[in-house]
Image (cartoon, rainbow, N blue to C red; front, side):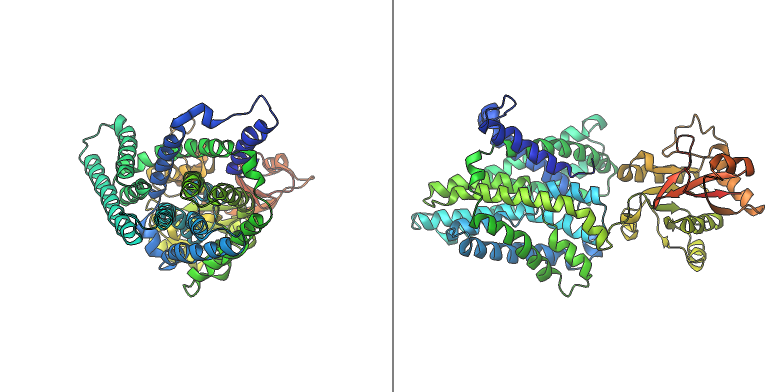
Length: 569
């Protein structure tokens, strides 16, 4: 449908919950009555797994590569975002300082449950994607902890500072428990890493053991102090992500699948748990406040954090717009609103409608606009146009030039410096990189790539290349040269082999050095693909470009009239 999935889930939850209950529809669901007392712990445990998986996607090499921009954006969100939202809530929505500060702390988070699926779907440039990913995952636990600190300070002030409920004690207690929780998460990750390295966990139990460990660490740190479990599991995921261990790579994909299921469920459950009376409170000054948060405060956070860091104006504009909120903000607001009310702050219940309003509008606006805006600012490619060719042999460079002539966007990567230099002299965009290295491929413009072609003389490397990129682009978007001496119809390849026995490295190289060249021709009514095959019986029809989209020529994908055909003849 080419529509943000999370927006559909949120709308489905609103329809099945408050709307359907209000009109008495038989399809109405009420999570509170379904789950009862289990609802809050189920949401908390699910959020813990989501944040752990998010932490596992953070590579320190990414942050180092993009300098201080990542860290400045994170700090700007925690400081500028918190202060600006608090002031806006006081002077626009007339909230009390305690409720406004709690709201400002909650909205520090930018929601990895939302931003990560958006970034995967939009496939934007590496630097803004890295900044948004780190900001979302790191600020999520810190935002929740900051909100809890503000809440406890507000409760302490409301109680008149009696007994241990004083501001200084709250701050010192927070610092101590946060440090302990971070250490627990760090040590748990180190222990798991060592156990995986030494083969102490059997293969079929690795994913269950790590999942159970995440839940145990989360619950243990929650017992120390509320919301500290989020910090512990994020640290745990971050440490495991930067451990060189192949088992962790396998587990990461399992965690991604679990997270997809959990996020989908959480969005429906939390939205359907709302009441229509809560949504009706989103009128007047509350709606104005949401608009200020979206259109003024978020750009202010981005410009304050990124100004002078070398980030381009377009990247700054993009980051200044994209800041969707997600499950963590909703769960924290639902928990803290009643506590503020019980402490004597009458406007505490307003936390839930305002936060859900921000979630709804940010998911709506940002989900619909992220890819068009990225394309408008030159931070995302036109879908289906770009191809990454791995290998820079002489005929590959000639093929790249023919593809560019047909209208495709071509990037070449190779590990041999002499071939890279020669390709660069030919005017082709080429990178000196080993595509099997995650750190090195951060330099590749993957936002412009929709296809990957393994075209080296090493059949095994081609297969590994396809295996590596199939996880990101899908199996149908990766292909390789046919291995020499292999029946391509029976071989179990990691990528497709579209040209059969004529498509081996040796066969194409031999034809090229015997005088065959890569050519481009436009198919017309009077000269279609059948006419082309009659005139060029020995040609290998390889690709065609139509409507600025690149396609493979195959028995199930014949080039239509009007397309530009790339072939070897």
